[in-house]
Length: 334
Image 1 (cartoon, rainbow, N blue to C red):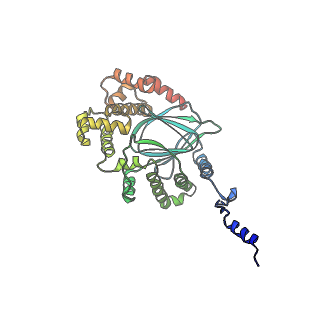
Image 2 (spheres, rainbow, N blue to C red; image 1 turned 90 degrees about the vertical axis):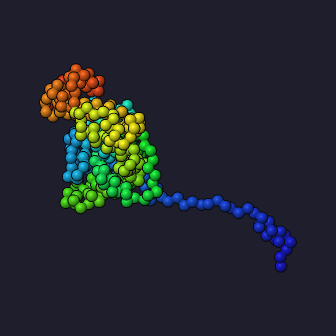
Image 3 (cartoon, one colour; image 1 turned 45 degrees about the vertical axis):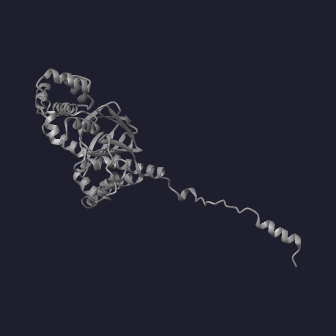
């Protein structure tokens, strides 16, 4: 038989608040691999591959089309070049790239892509004999980018971009695809079949990533970026010719003011500044490759005045042509 006290106790029990706290079962630390730990492991393996296949300083082309490995043991020597569209990352070290007045710094936690041909200056900012810079660079084929972009979901908007070059945070998915491509260097018989498949996946990861709009814009027919890419191709083809802004505007199907605006938005330079940098880079390349004199190199790239060429060359490279070429050869040990 129930007593009054016991009945009161039951009622009191029903009034007690329910414990709504959610208990979370925390798995052991060794069962979870955070993304940073995964990235570190991937970078270590990539660094080992680059050390073995690029044992000396410089750029080493590989058996995989478009893939170059880079090693550098000094931060003192700057480099300049006119680059095509490319993807770059590093397994060790850090680097600074300058395009026009813009500077881009990146390290092992980041990657860099360029969607257009650009004259650039670069310098290693972290490299030594004991811990050299170890880089991975892959040229990007615009036709492959266009084909893959067309196959991707159509709900991606073509966001306006302020530059055709950018630095993004390296994700495990991007690094994993790059690493699997590099692994093929140890099994060269697999390259003809597997390299195109893995490269396509890497392109997909880049197009899906935070910098993908830069690549999509450059190949999207009718976009401002695509029109500027056509203009850039004309400037490169007609390097030594006197090309007017009117001609370029007609080629891009833009007004002169619109051409100026969109060209600078994409490259960081006006069309004439871009042409000047192209000419000076090419003249420097000619003098280094052919051991030619400054006057003949200037003429071959379209300069009519050797003195003007010398002034502009010094302004860009920091020394007159002859002295600059001597310094470059000295730094290369030649």
